[in-house]
Amino acid sequence: MNSGRFVLSQVLDLVHRQTLDRIVKRYELATSVRHFGFRQQFICMVFAQMTSRESLRDITTCLNARSETLYHLGFSEPLAKSTLADANENRDWRIWEDLAKSLMRTARPLYAGEDLGLDLDNTIYALDSTTIDLTLSLFPWADFRQTKAGIKMHTQIDLCGPIPTCIHITGARQHDVGWLDSLFFEAGAFYLMDRGYMDFVRLGLIAKAGAFFVTRAKTNLQFTRHYSKMVDRLTGLRSDHVGKPTLEKSRRAFPMLLRRVKYVDLKTGKEFVFLSNNLEIPALTVAMLYKLRWRIELFFRWIKGHLRIKHYYGTSSNAVKTQIWIAVCTYLMIAILHKQLKLPGTLHRTLQLLSVHPFEKVTLNELLTETDHRTIINSDPNQLNLF
Image (cartoon, rainbow, N blue to C red; front, side):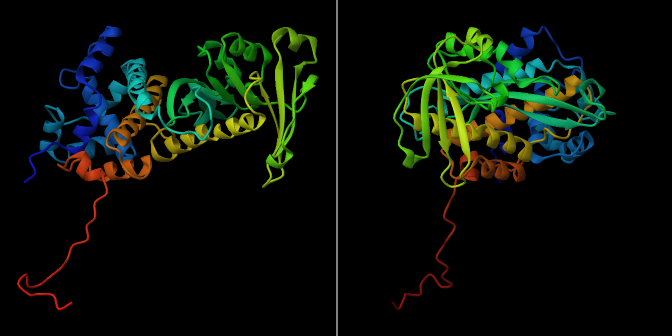
């Protein structure tokens, strides 16, 4: 019999007990349930994310199915649905936000060396948001429209990975561009944004911080050209102009030189107009940078498709944010394991294997790495081969 530890326990080892205890003390909180601490809550919610449990009852039923499993996970008594519900409702969601940020700091260096296919040494970030629809009758605090509720997940990712570096959860009413006011911009880094973030006041803040942006221009942009650069039309480039906004209000908000690059996708024939405050990099690099922004859309698609952030186990704001942040923690733990163990395939493959073997007693390396199972079958080991 394998005397090792459960696969789920090995995954949870990525979160050290001291780290979680330190975060809990930061908020001067203590569990009100003697035998159900913050780590037990985290175990339940990570198990639910990994195995796509449908409800609190589903979570508790599966975990209580074998008492020895609960004991080895650190539970001293059977898990009650109401206990988990109360923990999600009442324990401050910021604990899990801070834990996710700790995992982000672990994950980013592991992916720092990934090649993005560009001759740039700068850190490249992509910014965007995704809206999660909710039922207004169940989530009245998240009112969005007359008959609809929703929350918005504002996200910044490091494109090497991609690993989220900043996430902010708000009501769906908040406009995307307002989030930029609370961000700290890293000098020398590139920030890729769609035209929902097109605001010269905010773009000016990025430029004054010594950072660079690449975004799409709005169709009604008025631009005064100062001079032009040569472009190779065979690559899809149509123009590369340097100038300033025409309107006086826009020029006061962004007094620096602005670059406008027109590019046509040779496959689809669609024209794009990009804006950037970096005047040195090649025009084609500006277009290729914006193309990389699509990776944040893939990140949103991944967590929405493979983790539980569209259906919730509780209806309060605290329970919803708790579930989202623990889902982010789960994503980061899978990303860390994938890179530390040098696993083949995608993160989805890693998650699939973990989801069907949480209570197997096998090492993660043995479970997740590919092995050649082909064996030579010989009915008589003493029989010699003729050929």
